[in-house]
Amino acid sequence: METLAMHISNGIINGPVAGIFAAVALAALTFCVLRGRQDLDDRLAPMAGLVAAFIFAVQMLNFPIFTAGVSGHLLGGALAAMLVGPWVGALCVAVVLVVQALVFGDGGVAMLGLNITNMAILGTAAAYLLIAGLLRVLPRTPAGLGATAFVAALLSVVVAAQGFVVQYWLGGTTDLGGNITGLAGTMGVVHLLIGIGEGLITATTVVTVAKVRPDLVYALRALKPATPAPVPAVGGVR
Image 1 (spheres, rainbow, N blue to C red):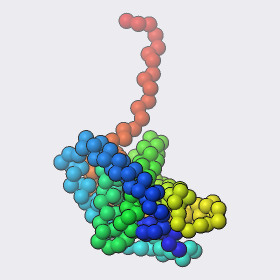
Image 2: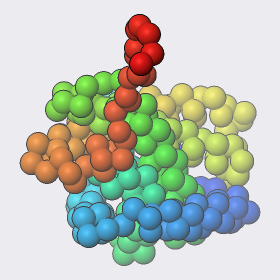
Image 3: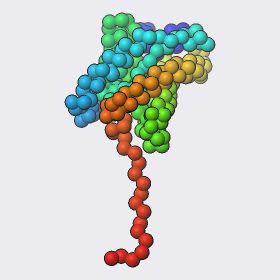
Image 4: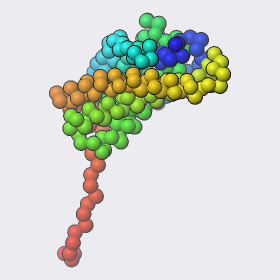
């Protein structure tokens, strides 16, 4: 059952692979800091603190997945990407993961690079790519925004889960007998169910914020709707 946990515990992945992903996570977060500076302003800076605090608080609430015998909670990548953007959003999720590992023992400290790569980097990146695509197709109404948030959140959880599968394939400490496909399928199904809960929480939160203060939703400000191509004039030239 430990191999189904998104918060990877110490000893699940071997040291060399954990070290590689620690370097990957550090490089990615450094890049996020550099890019995130361009977005920070009087509106985004306090919003980032609120988003990190909200994700931390909501992650304490677990919802059961009865068909799998496990429970899930919000990861927050899609929520952060919608409200504060991909760069600052990834940093918000990473801060939450560090606090959870150091203070609450949720995920091994030696596995922080793996957990940050999966949940803060992969999850947030996948969510924002989906958000960028969907907001150019769906109407920017509460229904369209809610659908975008739901789909992005659901699929970002599955992507993050498959990140763990790749890591386990590279350096898992328990021999699965070559059944990595079975692990991928199990992780995919379980986290698809978890993603439904993630999607509902994310969609509800984003739509609520957008109704009150649409200017605080980063995705609405940064992702401009596609403008139609100009229609050429008919007739002679003056």
